[in-house]
Each structure stands twice: as C-alpha cells, then as structure tokens.
Length: 394
Image 1: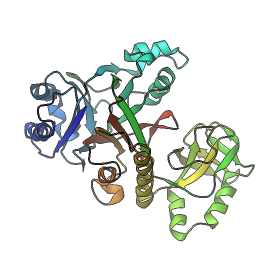
Image 2: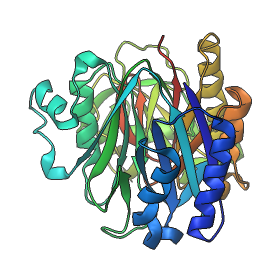
Image 3: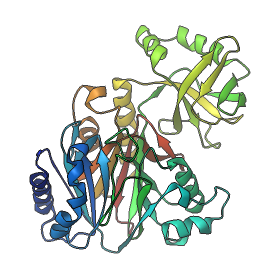
Image 4: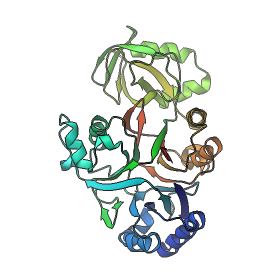
C-alpha cells in the first residue's frame, strides 16, 4: 500500500492539475494507482467536467472520486476560500474498490432489512467493507444514509463529508468515475487488505460534571439528576473563570455519551450537539439531538484553544493505541468553521496531525458537515475534524 498527495493554488485549471500530478508522481515513483481522491474549489467549477480525461491520462484506470469544497486540503496544506485543487492517490494491492451514486429516493425505508442496504451499495456485510462518503447538503438526507449503513454494516468504518463550494441547490459537484453529479451522494466501498481507522475531533472541552438525564421529551432536556438544566448551568457558571464565563454565553454545547456502558467518559466519548434554546420559565433546554432518559451528558465549551487541546488529545490517544500499526495515508474532512478563521493561521489541523501521528500523505477538504463515528455509531457533525487513516489489514 502506498499513498501520495499534492495540492496547487494555480488559478489556471490545467496548470493546477499538472502541478498536483507532478507532486504525486514524485512521491509514487513507479508504483501504480488504484484510487484518486480529487477535491476542487469552486473557482474551477466550469472545468470540473474535464477532470476525468486529465486524470485518466496520468493515472490510467484508477477510480476517481471527489467533490467541490470551500477549502481544499492536500500534501499537508490547507487552502481556504482561494483557488486550489488537491489529488490524493493510493495504490491498494489486495483491495477491491466499488463506487456508487445514490439519490434520496433510492434509500430504503429505515425499517428495511440489512439486505436492502447491501443492495444499495453493492457490497455485503460479510466482505467487511469500509466506506468513504461524499454528499450534497441540499438534496440528500445524509443522516438517513448513515443510520442505514450502520444498521447494515455495523462493523464497517464510515468517513466523509458534505460538499461545500456553494450554498445554493445543485451548485455543488460530486465526482465519481467519469461522472459529475449535482445532487445525491457518491461513495466507495473498500474490501480486502485494508483497515480504516477513524479519529473525530469535535473541538470542545467539558465543564462541570457528567450528569444523568432524568427527564426529557425528544430533543428537550427537562431534568439532569432531578434538577432543571438552567439551575445546573447557574451552578456551573459560578465555578468558572471569567474567560470561560464569556465562552459559556455564546459557545455552549452539550456532550452526550452515546455508549450506555461508559460510566467514566473521556475525550472522544461524547457526541457534541448545539444548545439551541433555553426556557428560563421552565428551566428546560432545546438540544440539537434526540435525547433518552438515563443518558450520561456533560456541558462543553468551544474556542480555538479548546479545539487545539481536543484535537491533540484524541490524536495522542490514537497514536498511543496504534504504536504497532503503520499508517500509510489519511483523509481529513474538516468543518468550514475551523481552519484559519478559528485558529488565526493556516494548516493547523494538518500540522498537528503530522506532529502526533507522523508525516504521511494527507488530503481532504473543508465540509458543510463532517461524517465520522462516536462510540461506534456514525454521525453527521459540525465544527469537527474527521480523519480517516488507512493501513493494510494484514
């Protein structure tokens, strides 16, 4: 297995592609290619349909997959809101790759059996596939796809993001093979000698203490340890520093432990969701997630420093758990709300990944929603960096 990644900010489409391919070929040498991930900024929108022929001339029969993005990641660099193209190329001996394009109407009912989901993506659970998924945020119910794939393929890793080059319907581009789509979702399954590890950094740190939900109504949080959430927040607020009190006023989130067997949660065990509203009269909170009584939750804060600490913690944890597993390549699906507008400088997450995990080829893009697992269940996130790390299984 071998990976390579290149990126170009050349405003000329053909010139940018040549720069990317030159960087990739220098890294790959004479090794052949099986997969080409291509991410393109909206500045080249008119040129995207011509990608296939240009890439095929260099990389032969490799499967091409990608999308348009508001920021592009390649060769360890992050380019935001400027012209950029990245190519991330992989040689995957012993791996079978199958691509699929689906529209919202193609999705089975959520009560359909696993076989319907296998038919949808043209692979069986027994083959132990892993998935890369890219979707249009305006025309496709991505969360329904994730629910179905988790049901049909409970032991498979799923990683990806929502295209982000445009905020209008049918103005984003999804690329698979020689086709460009403006709706739906594209994906690939990978079976055989490949492992896909995932690291999801949601950019928050906890405040207060973990508490149990003792009453809730769908997404309304009614009681925590038999107290109203607002009264809990008042107690938490009184114990915070002035800086954290300021954050709590505009960057407050709720972390939900999705694994009912975890009693002592650590970084990475929480699904982070927005606190969408507060009713001072009743003391209830509206949360951006359906809640269940008995769930363990904890309030969280987010800012640039917190996001850095969170990413460093989950990458340290991954590196420590995988000392004997050599990573060969990675994809990064990061939120448009991160990057230089959060940290004040470019390449933040890519550089921290290199520091903690190693200098391996990494490509990707800034998304309108990031796909990745928390406690074994795949979710659509916001403000998150979701890494897919590839290595041979054997």
